[in-house]
Amino acid sequence: MLGIAAALTVIGVLGARRPHVVRVSVPIADLPPDLEGFRIVQLSDLHIGPTLKRRFVERVVTTANALDPDVVAFTGDVADGFVPDLRDEVAPLGRLAARLGKFYVTGNHEYYWDAAGWGREVERLGLSVLQNSHQMVRRGNGRLLFAGVPDLSVPSDPAAALRGAPASDVRVLLAHQPRSAFAARDAGFDLQLSGHTHGGQYFPFNLLVRLFQPFVAGLHRLEAMWLYVSRGTGYWGPPLRLLAPAEITLIELTAA
Image 1 (cartoon, rainbow, N blue to C red):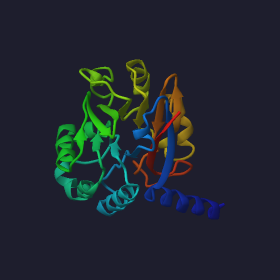
Image 2 (image 1 turned 120 degrees about the vertical axis):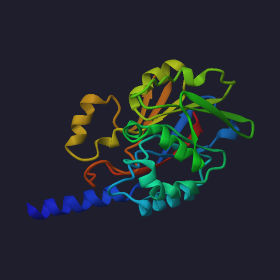
Image 3 (image 1 turned 90 degrees about the horizontal axis):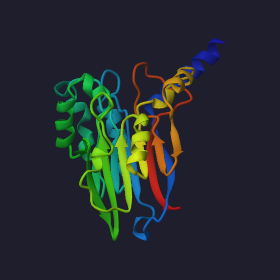
């Protein structure tokens, strides 16, 4: 019994500190040919702080860049601490590379540690902060709208994020919490990218998460909209993951 417990602990620790690449194909109706194979690398829930440091961030950035993304989407919870204490630890995020844009939204943990300060720091590192707002990107004749809303801790409005938006072929929402999906569906988004749940992080806690979160991990269909929930790239609390491995997600758009 002790041997089993020790083995599970080792597996859990390795699963927490070694995020693997998850590849997800998302079919989009009437996707223009120029957007076929559009690549979005999603990072979420890094939680840089007491036990996850600069070296971990460096490995994440190296892996993300190797996936050759068109866009990087960071869906919140960058750190657990104040900017002056963790600036050097998160600095490798400034090396993230994407052809068309790097976008970020706040998670709930930013509001424990000065969300405005983290917004400024993330922008300094080259990511665009989306707060109930949007930006357009183009690839050839294809037009994608990337919108973002802050965590549900503060006013978070997918419909407001679309105000004044020009015509686009695909609408993607970055929202830390999966529960934003119902409002995103009603606002007319094609895809929402979220995190927050950590996929439950470790058994049996992942069973309890399902009592509070309608979507825990993976790809879901909500009427005409897709929702992808990342299990998170880092971890929170105990440095342990069991049956919910850390991930760096590669989303590829394809014609339905």
